[in-house]
Image (cartoon, rainbow, N blue to C red; front, side, top):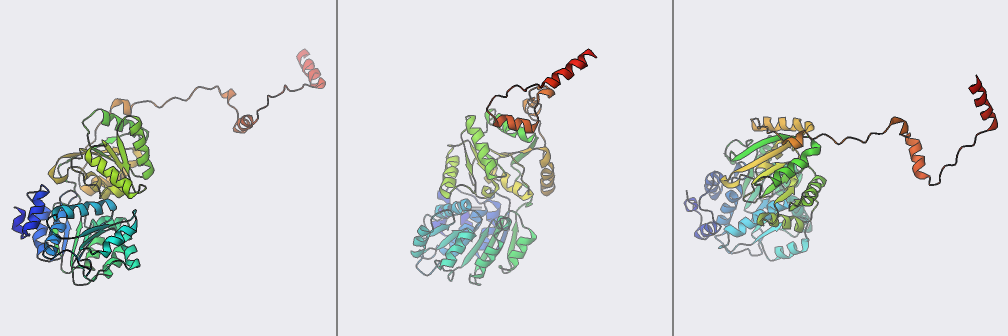
Length: 426
């Protein structure tokens, strides 16, 4: 079904075709006609199925009939959990709406607020924002919501996971009650339904596939491996296979940096992306990964929803995520837009409980693969053999390490020598 049949304007259809898209995905086919009619929507679909265009295109179609923003205020607000996702949505708006006279601004933290303030003063039609920085603008009085026509909550479940629920409610309370509200998420929990009930009017529920199942195009497997040998297994895979664009997930920022350093010492071009990096560093890393400058990008879960790179060949879970939902979002970075992909998970003994939760959540067992023999059977390095009688006590060792003067021979008294002679005669 071509996009033209959705009732979209000719300039918008031209913009869609200019980006290289010719046919909508299933979530787009179902959501766009309903959104164009102005109805509230709850859209649930697996990661990588095209949810962004499902709400961006109706917004552009609605606002594109009028000229670019005058100083009457923002007409559409899109809330999203991460900086990377805000930038990605902004780029999608600019691409699809290249033939429309609309102004767009992405608002997020980690960068100077002054440039955002200057752009807002000139008038903006569409704002894509993370909750924290948007609240900063609200407190400054630099943003007006009186002209809002459309509100979108993208990756709503992730915003709840990241603790943004109070911020979201505070922002929504400041918006006009007469508006169209669209909520999109990869999973729909009771908390999401409760959030929807307080901000939507008779929403149309659109669910594509089973929300807890990763897309079928992704091949999944696990490798049981000792924690200390995970890096050896990763290096073996990267050097001995056709892994040309690999996203590696670490549970912590420190772990991500450590993995990156080990890869670089082994000659593998890589970059790390996490909340400890500045926005410019994160964007440069993402751009370098997209362009093929880096073979591997190591990321934490906070970046899982904001990475939209076509052609990722493999996702490797260096650490098993503690939450099953995060596993679905992680592996959804590959196999996007009907492409195929591979997801590999390294599982140490203490992570098996997380694997069981994941398998229960997705409703299937993940096949287990055998590790290379050198990884799984390599003996631990033996400690040097030292005779027990030569091992000093901890206290003596400490004293010896402090003293720098040679010890003098101990003096022997005359009485002691006489006692030894008597014992010898007996």
